[in-house]
Amino acid sequence: MVQSTVKGHGESSALRFRDVCAELEVYLTDLTFELNSTRRNSRGIKRFLKAKNVSDAITGYRERVRTIKEDFLIHTAVDSRLVISDIKAELKTSTEALTSAIEASQQHTISNTHKNTDRICEEIRTWGVLQSQKADLLSADVQTLKERGSDKVRDVRRWEIYVKKHLASSYLFKCSNRLAWFDTYSAEVDNSNAPKIVRVYCSHRESNKLDDVIQQFHIDIDRLTNLKHPHIAQIYGVCRSPDFLAIIFHGTKQVSVRSHCAWLATDACGSV
Image 1: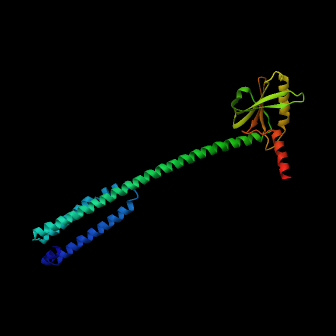
Image 2: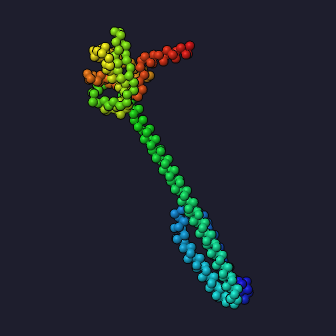
C-alpha cells in the first residue's frame, strides 16, 4: 500500500515516510537503551516511563503517520483498513510484551532489593552485637589489667560484694589437723567492672572454731599478697567483716598454689 501510494504521489511522499520511520527507529532505540540501563532500579522504571511520556510519544507518531496517510490520499479503503488493523495489532502486541517485560523486571528487582536489604540489615545487626561484646570484653580486660598492675590490697566492705554463682566448696589442712572450710563464688564488686572470684571463710563443723578460721584467713592473706605469678589467682582485696571473712581474686578462674605446683610436677615428669 505504501509503495503504491509513493508511486502515485511522488518522491516527497517517500521522504516523509522515511523521515518518520527514521525518527521512530531512533526513539525506540533510545527508549530501549534507557530502559535497560534503569532496569536495576525498580523505583526508577515508573518514574522513567512517566517522565518520558511514552504513551504520548507513541500517540504522536500515530498521528503523524495518519496525517501522512491522509495526505497520500490512499484510495483503496479495504487495503488501508487491513493494513491499519495489522499495525494496531502489532503495536498492541509489542506494547503488551513491553509492559509485561517491565513488570517482570520490576518485580524481580524489588524482590532482590528486599532480599538484600534483609541480609544487609542482619549482617549489620550481627556485626553490632559482636562489636558490643568485644567492647565489653576489652573494657573488662583493661580494667582487670589496671587492677592487677596495682600492688594495693583493697579493703572491701561486705555490702560492696555481690555474690552470684556458687562455684565450689573446699577446705584447708592445718597443723592441728583441723579443717578450715571456705566456699568459692563468682561475684561482682563495686567500683570494678571486671569479674571476680570470692573465697568466703566459714566453719561448717563444730570442730572448726572461729579462731581457727580467722587464723587460716590471715595465713592465706600473708601467703597470697606477695605471690605474683600469671598462672595463680591474684588478690584484688579482702573483706574483714566478722560474719563475712573473704578474699577477693581477679578474674573468673581460680588456680590454687597447690594445683599449680601439681601441674608443674606433672609437666616436669612428662618432659623427662
